[in-house]
Length: 167
Image 1 (cartoon, rainbow, N blue to C red):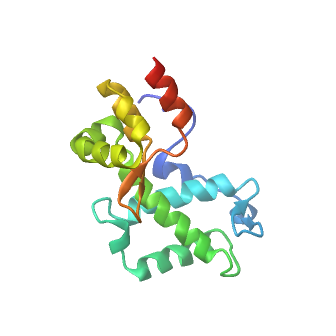
Image 2 (image 1 turned 135 degrees about the horizontal axis):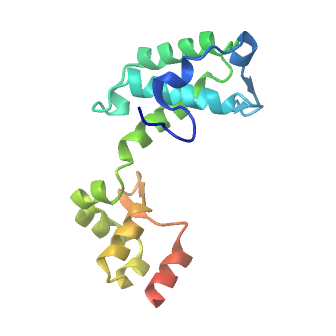
Image 3 (image 1 turned 90 degrees about the vertical axis):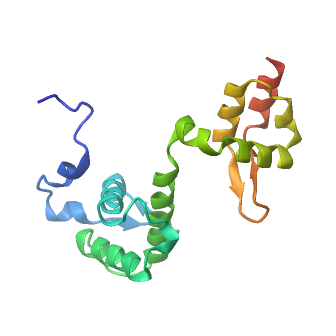
């Protein structure tokens, strides 16, 4: 059996015995996990999302009880004693579940590239100068959908776009 490298991953990660005190997570004033266990909580959450929430069903179609069950499981597992962090926790879980569906890179983008590129050019004239298809793919993967306008935007990478145009 091949060695996995960089540590254990997947369901086996949570099969080793952890001391009772290791399942305690603290939260800051913004209700975000903090301390040395925050990464283990994040890993646990990712594992729960992959095993309990179907990849093929959009996040907004999950029943509210599914999210409530996830929160109650987290409270029991991680010794969370109040519901203060609940809203932030569920919001992060929904975002993580949604992000997991979008991570297909260039391969996934090629299916809907033309539509995305047209909506990106409609919102930002600087990208019209990009002629190379590979460069267009690079920029399109970094574009974010503005839900109000229905257009894609590249707010954070204008300097990078200018550099690409100059090349």
